[in-house]
Picture 1 (cartoon, rainbow, N blue to C red):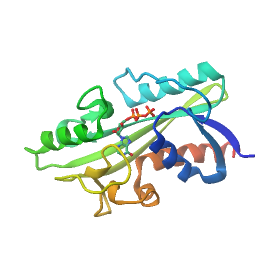
Picture 2: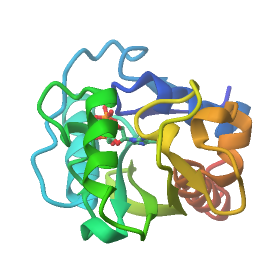
Picture 3: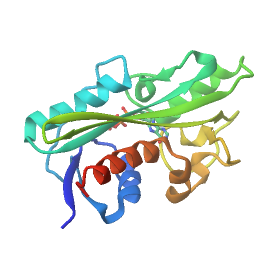
Picture 4: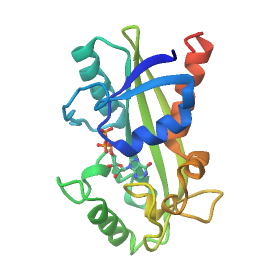
Length: 196
Ligand code: ITT
């Protein structure tokens, strides 16, 4: 049986992407699969602090090994916004379409469309915490394109591609993705320490 670990997230898209990266190396349980039905707060000003909060809450609740991640879209011309506020950029209802509309609108006056997705994973393994980071650089498009994925995927083209993340299937997205890179760091840590 592969090593079991809880992924402290309520975002089903993140779970699918991470499971596609780990394959059968790990037995990953989402919060739903672990029977934990809570909405974990993300009150902090950095991805690192929010990721830590999520993993610590679940670790305190279960005593089990777990990891969480916080991801932000950091747009150069907007001084790193929406960043840690990516989920609630256009308001508390966390509406993907409204977030995209606001982003495109705020970027209209700027010719610099450079941006990056940054994922921070917080792992709690045997009561110790570890952080891992993954970055994907790219460009924000003028308009939304594609139907796959979630969040800002329809307006982000990773460097090295001419398609938005939302025009890619999950395996293609994972060739570039911030989340995949951060998860790869976690897997490397597990391999180096003989955990898997
Ligand atoms: P959990 O906290 O439960 O893990 P969440 O959806 O709240 O899930 P975040 O706080 O990390 O996750 O949300 C950041 C927002 O950034 C998310 O709602 C999306 O709008 C966006 N986002 C994160 N990863 C993304 C990706 O790979 N592609 C597009 N947008 C993404």
